[in-house]
Image (cartoon, rainbow, N blue to C red; front, top):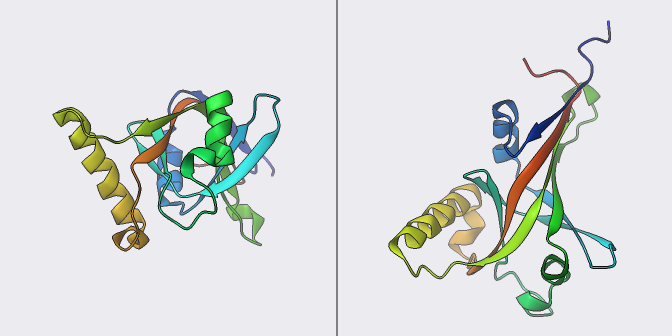
Length: 161
């Protein structure tokens, strides 16, 4: 019986609760940006989900160019439409799944000018430190890519109950 083998769904602006745990437990995502001439560019990134937005830090890992010169940053400045993919692969294909987020990205500088923004920065930093212990030894940075979720597309080999 193949009735339960395929599940594809499209939701508006929010991540379905059934897939929230899958996304938040994932260690890496793939950010796809496109230049103004629509040339795609995919980058593996770390991320958190916060208030229905994806945050990707532009951290202090070694880079050969400045943060503002990164291709993903230039692309977002030219064309804010992005996709973000989180997936899971195993040789046992009954465990496969993916969540693709379609959204609009902006560059956000975490400057903490207001009490509300300082609280938001602390929440984001705390989530990153909890998820990625590497940030206890490496600066998360002050600039983030913030992806506002417009649509989610998800698939799982076996339907989530």
